[in-house]
Image (tube, rainbow, N blue to C red; front, side):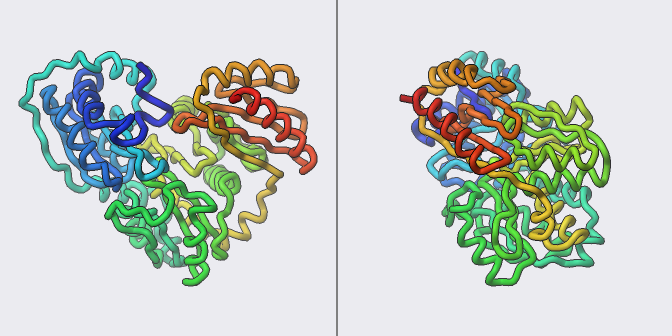
Length: 438
Ligand code: MG
């Protein structure tokens, strides 16, 4: 049974992700991961029901639950690490409000593929003993904020005291980012920072969903704005004009900043643009490319002792104690960048970007479609890589066609030095995918 996608268990609550499923996963975690589990949730309306069902499963199997309440995913991961036990986050990240899911951790790391297989095998087999322990765990968010603050120069930020709009999408970061930035000396204007579970905007921090956020940044004369997804591991930056820096640009900027502090390895995924590659090479860094997904990025970072790892969606991992994407630390690092180097729009304008296009195409049978796509793409020539989907690199551009790990869609990404080249590449990629999903 394939229970796990690229980001744990995720689906529409009550349909794919039910209380019964959460109960069974709770039991299985005790058997397959650890009998102590820290549990947290984002702010979705279904969160408490899902958490209670999962907790019931852990207790039935005789396990011990530490409930952290509403907390960002990185805070939950840190709690799991520091207590040397399992972690379970009830979240569907950036997916729409009707979705929910369970993301599992083992001693602070995202549960490995092997761990996921262990959980799948233990489903339905767990012994029911009853007699577990259900306790509250206080201070999880505070612990995480303290760690994130230790990673930046608070003195420099405080001196500059930037005015920052924080849009947490009324998600889990509402309980963390405004406080973390204030503690660093920022003047914070909160937007969508309550935890009622009424989402005022789409949870994915993209251009469409951040129109109002951008207007808000301009209206209050902020130095920049930051926007999170539902569980606070993702962070997107808007400049003082309320414009998104661009996912590739902000990734290139953060990779460059990391390399200026310390030379070394930068890890990113097959989705990363030429801007990131060039930013890393210009500063004498070495780039390692992994399949999409923060787990692969974290593993590559561990192996290579990397100075920074990030995905183009806005999920960044900083070296140190925490080995998962951290939207709160990301917000602080951009505050530090602003304090040290000035206007983010000006820094962004120094990053050379090439014409790029991304799209998703609905697809109900991704496996079958990808088989067709791999066959067709192999006829295109170029350098072919299949570490994740199909990536074909040409002299001046590249295309990536891969199945989404969280949605029933095939994603296409193309980038080229010229607009004309991009149009040609795009037409080829689209033709291949359309034929495959027909
Ligand atoms: Mg997320």
